[in-house]
Image 1 (cartoon, rainbow, N blue to C red):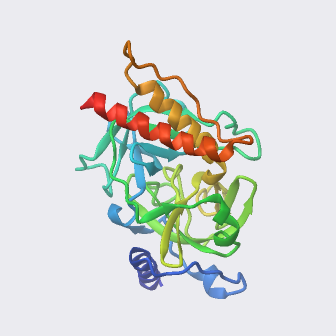
Image 2: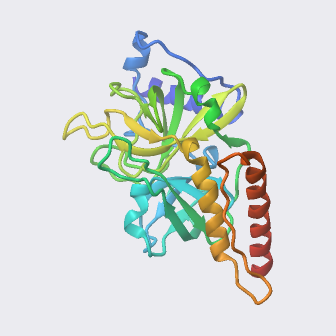
Amino acid sequence: MQSKTKLKVLILISLFILGCQPAKHYDYSDPYVTTVRHLIVNGTEIDADIFPRTVALVAPEKTYIFCTGTIISNDLIMTAAHCVTGVQGKKFYIMYGCKQLQGCNNLIGVQKLSIYPGYDKTKKHWNDIAILLLDRQVPLDTNVHTLHPSQYSELLKRGTEVIIAGYGRSSDKGAYGILRAGVTVVTKQYRNEIVLGRHMPEQSNICFGDSGSSFYIFHEGMKYVTGVASRLFTVSDEQMCSGGSVYTLDGRYNHWILDEYTNMLTDTLPETNYLKVNYSCSISGPAYRNSFQLCYIMIFFALFIRKMFRG
């Protein structure tokens, strides 16, 4: 059973690499869906270049990985808010292109971070999302696209199969820090969150350390990445990582991400006697389209100026 399961995971991930696997929709009455076991917990280690947008968050001491994140721009990382509340004001790092921290030199410092102002763990919907501005640019794989919210209803239907990947634990009590991947399905979508693998303990699942990670999906030969791993449904004290998980739907926060990204870029520009940058991007209201275009123009300008001053 274990060898067959591992083979199925590898086949699905191979199809992901080739980009030829359409989104699948399963009937929960299918006995195969509820009996196959291919977990991130005790699951499959995977090379980082297969999931090029997935990165690790590395502690200030550079000795361990504490969360996972996703590249959404060359110098911008998306992760869970709860991952970074404890490191505000500290220098920490992201790791890209490596399966594990040991022996990896691909570390980039985080220059600024912004936590969504509505983040609140005491409420039903946590708004668990944050963005990190890097000291320098990271390679961005443009063959994997971020999923636009207009595609959520079509591509994230109940029963849709997705691939989850992260640097979290390999078991409820195991160590973490190695990139693993597995397969699970969408069980519910509501408001700004989506549930994966709920009431399906034999499906893949995230565990501690996978927070902030995204999941991957195929559609019509295209590869997409979306979501921010927020929290777990626990089965029992002995099974903390097998009850399903909740992801924040990052596309619902696109306006905030764009505004904050622009503001962080502006704050990092050097001030001179002839250059003063003071603007904000709002893409709401009647001038939505013009403001949206203006935001991108200003972001491009800010990136150009930033690069010019840094040589």
